[in-house]
Image (cartoon, rainbow, N blue to C red):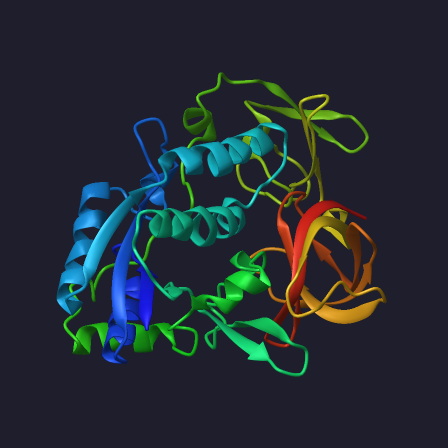
Amino acid sequence: MEILVGVSGGVDSAVALHLLKSQGHNVIGAMMKIYDGDIKTIANSCYGTDKIKEINDAKANCDHVGCEFHVFDLAREFNDIIFSEFKNQYLSGLTPNPCVMCNKLIKFGEFPKKVKASGVKFDKFATGHYARNEFNAQTGRWELKKGINPKKDQTYFLYRLSQDELNNILFPLGAMQKEQVRKYALENNIPVAKKQDSQDFYKGDYSELFDVEEFKGEIKDRFGNVLGHHNGIWNYTIGQRKGLKIAYREPLYVIDIDKTTNSVIVGIKDETFCSGLIANNINWVALDNPQKPFEATAKIRSASNPVEVVVYPSENEIKVEFKQKISAIAPSQAVVLYDNDIVLGGGTILNSF
């Protein structure tokens, strides 16, 4: 089988590449170039701080298995589709999740399309994500399942994949622990076996990232009392405690961001808890447009533990009620629904209640 493998210069994609090659497939390595001189987000993202080194590492991994290596420039697509929306949402007081949309629209969207348009032929597209996909003959649908290592599971970032995409994707690392991946890399002399994992999408001052002037405003409690000041609402997210610099009788947390008044609203821990949320932009994976309420577990951020919920679907959105109140629900983040290790679907959080 001809398999295109998305490589990044890291150990995960390198092991995925080597595993597929060792299984007898003809593999082709391809890397996305999604940065240019005007985009700073990648400095602490998929490609680390030294972009040339990442390309060289990816090429070394391909040379190690004796396969082709290609680099495709998607900087314009990344800037127009992902970064611009990321910036606009943060400046509007929201907390977007760029990795979810990058996976859907760039990594599993524009990237393989651009590769195919270049004349490179392949049957399947593989990545180093910790996830699994299996076809359920009873339902006639592809299922996206958690990777077996809960600490490395990446299905939260992949819930927007379609049935057609899941049909054409391979996740070679889905049944492996991270320790097994490292051991495999060392035993097979993979060049990046000891390389550290990449970091978050961006770490730094968003004022510098967005190239905007400070936009000072007030930090208030929910009654309108001014407790402090801020230099830009984009520096805050729901549930945040650090960086408020306000002396108070109890620890304070961000409970709301009001774009219309340029205000950050804070409260004590009890004020961060919610009974449920509304989400739109729904993508159903294991389910096919459910009409009736159902029970599930849900994650409202990638690192959170799943919580028990009741889901009320409607035509364009879902209402998710928690069986126990949870805190810090941030609009524009994703809510992903599960049945044990199976991703049922998910959507974009509009608000909480």
